[in-house]
Each structure stands twice: as structure tokens, then as C-alpha cells.
Amino acid sequence: MSMNFSDFIRQLGADPSSKDADFLRARESSPEFAQAAAEADRFEQRLQRAVNIAPPPNLVAELQALASDAGATGETSRSRPRWFAYAMAASVLLAVVVAGSLWRSGPQPTSLEQYVAMHYSHDGERLVAQGAGQTASNIEAILARFDVELTPEIARQVGLIQFCPTPDGVGAHLVLNTPDGPVTVIFIPGTTAKDGQWLSLDGMQGQFVQVPNGTAAVIGGNRELVDNAHNLVQFGFVARNTGA
Amino acid sequence: MSSEGQRLARFNELAAAYGTDLYRYAMWICGNDALAKDLVQETYLRAWKALDSLNDQGAAKSWLITILRREFARTFERKVPKFTDVESVEVPEDTELEPDDRIEIQLLRRNISKLPPKYREPLLLQVVMGHSCEEIAELLQISKSAVMTQLFRAREQLKERLQRDGVTGNVHELF
Image (cartoon, rainbow over all chains, first blue to last red; front, side, top):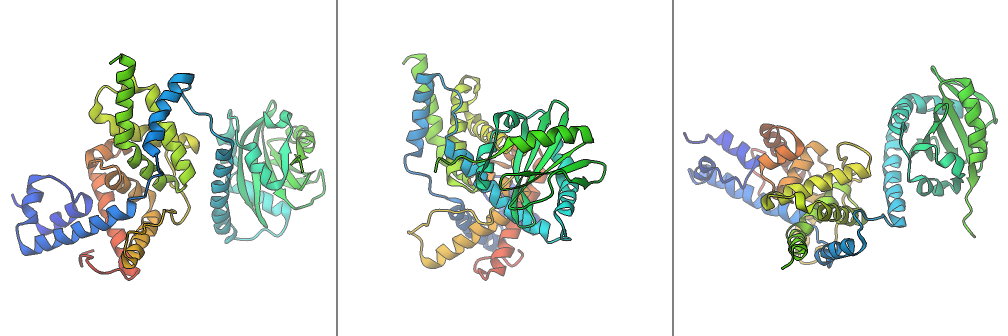
């Protein structure tokens, strides 16, 4: 049975290079079909040129060299160069800036406390679940933006860290897997708050901690957990030693 | 030739046959040259390690793209790869194109990068990697008819956007 024009157009749009016999016959079955096919072919040529990104020079040779290198060293997974972590952090930062713009187009927080409450209700629980049992590897790359770093004691408890939108730009959102339970830390750079001030959060306990170059909001399921984490965060965030 | 030599020759064939397309695909999904190169290199390292498990050389392309997608997902600690949020993929300037063509290509590239991921990924698998609709369905674990619909809509949206951008020549009136 011959293909009708509507089915033909659908096939052209989905799989213009199809070798289906009915489809191939239909292409030449009438001037109307032939014209549609010719226009689709022209579009495909343009599409092909558009996706045809020039590869780096020597790409194939470099890939082929991998086998020799891996065979010589017994390496099965390349350790990523240091710049990779920074490149990743930079690209994620860009996404956060975009997402933050959208997020900030909603109701605006009028205080740091309100910001923390809104932020945590937005994605706090989801990120706690995401960071559970994990070990974050991009701590240094993210916190370097704020000229702070973590002591080893707190760093080894970080299950997740990512950039997050803040009222004035970008901060960092951390999930700590402490022995007492998960704790969220929202680092808001360039701000000050009353150290130890308890926060009013829906079903959670939170407290501000003053740290170098900003404020950290520490959030957990109960006061004891937050109290313990307060000290961890207070002494765990340190100004970055840039060697300058 | 020794078995190790044969293995190396087989790997080199895979690199020559699919390395460039994998890079292009990686570039489109992550929008970053350094990351794309890294993804492709990691893919081939894993392929080298697991080369003996590839019994059917005809399945090599799908095998490699599966490794690359998994590696991309692992990089972002997500099960399903997420396309870059960067609005426009940066691509090297093609100096061989006429100015009008160059504008049109840039518009197309921008519009491809703006396609919803569910339309963009099957389109790239088809146009960049040359996968059939059946192969795309298997890779994305969706039905062939869903793939066909997504491919049709991807092209439909591209044509509509080109028309909106003023590039109307050769666009079929039905679209």
C-alpha cells in the first residue's frame, strides 16, 4: 500500500535517510512528494553542517596513544587533572547564576534568616538525600571562589557541595555526613550575622555561625545536632592560604 | 600478530572510526571543549579496559556511546545525563563558509542547543552518531515510536525557530 502524504512528511521529519522501501518509493511518487523530499534533504545538509564541530587536531592519535599509555602503566581510569575540577566548578557556577536569576524572580527574602528558610525549603531535603553516604571531591574548587577552605576534619564529612544562589550572588551549599546525622551548611559570602542566633525553620533547627569571609547557616534535625555542628563549622572554615 | 597486538589494532580502529563523532556528541551534550575531550578520553580508556567484552564489532558504536553517556552521567552524579544549561554551544568558526551560510549555521547551532533535552539527544544520536531509530530507542530505553515522535518534533521546532529568526528559504510550508 502506498504511503499517504501526511505519513510521508512524518517519516521525512523523523528519519529522512530511511531505507524503507515504501518511503523510498513515495519520494518519487509525485511532484508534491518529490518537492517535500528535496526540501527535507536541503534541511538535512544544513543540519549536518551545523552539528559538524571541528575536532581538536590529533584527537584520534591521542586516543590511540591512550591504549599504549594505559598498557604501560596498568592505568584503567585517568586521574583527572587539577584544572578539570576548576573547569567543572566554573561551568556549574554558570548554571547556578542562571538558575539563581530564575529563583530570585520569585518572592524576595527580606532578611538573611528568611533567605535561609526559603533556600532550605526549596531544595534542602533533596540535597541531604543526595549527599547521604557520599564523599564530595570538588570542595577546594568550589570554596576557592570565596577564598575559604575546610580543615581536613570537616572536609572528610562533606557528602555534597555545590554552588547555590544567594541574595547577592552565589554561595555554597554543603551536606555534612556527621556521626550524629546529616547537617546542611549554607555558606553566604560577604555577610555577617549574629553568631549562635537560632533560625526559625519549618520542622528543622538552624543556627548562624560566623566564619571567615561570610556567614554559615547550619541546619539539622535537632538542636543537639546543630550545636555539635556549630563548633565543627566554626573551626572548620578557614581563610584560604593562597600563598600570596 | 600477537594477541596483544591484535587487541591494540582493534582499539586503534575504534578510535579512528568513532573518535571524532564521539567528540562532537560529547561537545554537544556538555558544551565545553575541555570536558568533551576529557569525556572521550575517559570513554576510550574504559573501552580499552573492557575491549574483550565487545564480541560484536558491529555494536561498537552503541557500546562506545553507552560508555560515554554513563561517564557523563557519573561526572554529574546523575543517572540520566543532563544537557548543559549554557544557551549556546561554543564552536570553532568555520572560515570556509559564506557569511550567509555562517549566520544560518550559527542560528541552527543556537537553536539546537535550545531544544528540550528529550528532543535534542535523539536528534544528536541520529545526526552526529548516525544511529538508527531502533538503536536510539535501545540506547534511551524508550520505544521506537517515541523516538520517531521526538525526532519529528525536534526538526519541527528547529524549522519553526529558523522561520522566526528569518531564515525561511527552503523550509517546507507544512512545518
